[in-house]
Length: 67
Image (cartoon, rainbow, N blue to C red; front, side):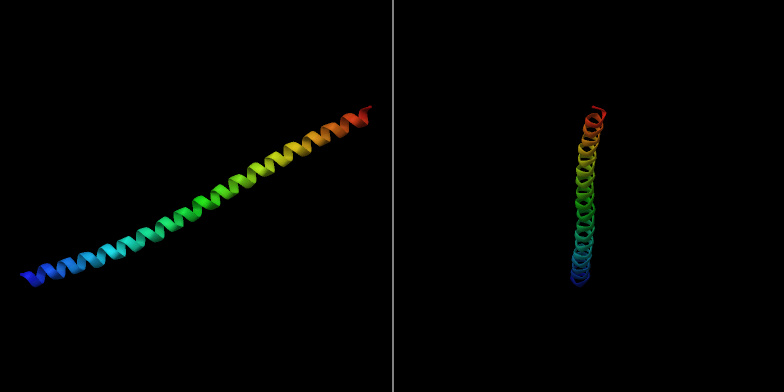
């Protein structure tokens, strides 16, 4: 009976290790996606700011040409 319990404990420990590694890999993947999304959002915000700046320059140039 003790051998059976020891085998079950060992099997449980192996299963825990496998599940832990799987969880670790999944979390690393999720973190990678989160970092990538954050970077993309930042780049889009920078792009939008540059577009606004260029639009303001166009308006200023058009106003200067109208004079």
